[in-house]
Length: 451
Ligand code: PHE
Image (cartoon, rainbow, N blue to C red; front, side):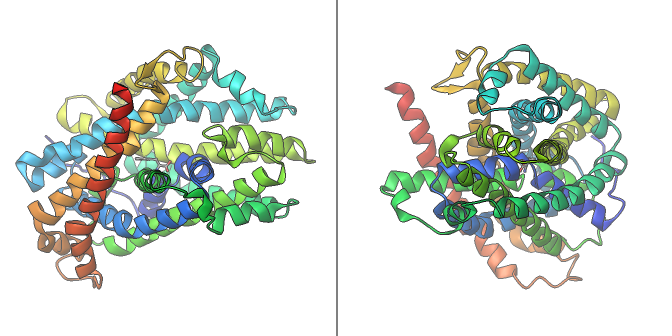
């Protein structure tokens, strides 16, 4: 087992890479559609509460563990306690699962970039017919994975950091422009209202509320890349002089602002053109091209938008690939290039089944979910929360708050005013919340299997 030698070349580069990992399809594609299917503003409010209670403390813990140990996710956790490597293993396994569905969507995005050039008439049925094909989506997924492999094989500061530093700022500028455009559409206000003003009739029963809570927690984990070893891995490339607490706040703030801007870019357009916000995972793919096709210059905006989605997706997926690759590099004799290639091929194989299950071979199911949905469910509802729970226990009880705080403050060099809050949250609030929500969701998943 080798310790990590690579490092970020600057603080800005690290923030761009970590925020780039957080900001991704989770913000642009998932957040608007889950807000749409989970009752709008009530969901957004619960989401923000979870960001504060779970998101910030867990993200900070992961960075601290990574920087303290300076190794890949599994070996970093094992350095804190030899029996705790499994906490990091959730990341390595989970990253694989997320990639198997993330790359499918990444492939769709590439197809849409090309299509928005050539086909001005992309109607909302296009998504159904395209995603249900067998060959094409797999081809584009392969292209997406190839891009990932090329970036990750180039290394941490040379590949990941360089790409994120260029792509993330571009993405933010683009997205703000599209939001402004969306907000000026007729009836845009209905979308804004749906997004920001709670409508409690969407929460008619306790089970409605529980499903909102469950979705919100999953989304916090997914959006911040938590419980997956990503931030442990990225933290391991950090120099000792980084102020982890302030980096954490910056990353969470950027991620949240982008999620809100995405909501304000997509939902007003959905309402303005009379689509249903409850559309589900096709929301972005079905509604936006239709919106763009109705406006002059729409082709250019559509192309720009999907390029931006690709940027966001890439800066996240490379972080997932890096979790696995850094572990493989440290524990085998493989070079970074070979590790990247082999892991990418394995993900591709899983991705093929995941892609086919979306429509071409709908029988590839686990329980009542398609394999694609299962990979999604398994990662953000099972692996990530469980990974997060173990990170809380590892930090709060095994490593101990005092040791964690020593790392966070660089042995007292930085102020850390929220120490007590952090301790309380990581030891009690976060684990209790995750355990309760997780248990109730597991029951709701398992029960229907026996019916
Ligand atoms: N946070 C990413 C997004 O919002 C997805 C992701 C999850 C990346 C877990 C890394 C680890 O799209």
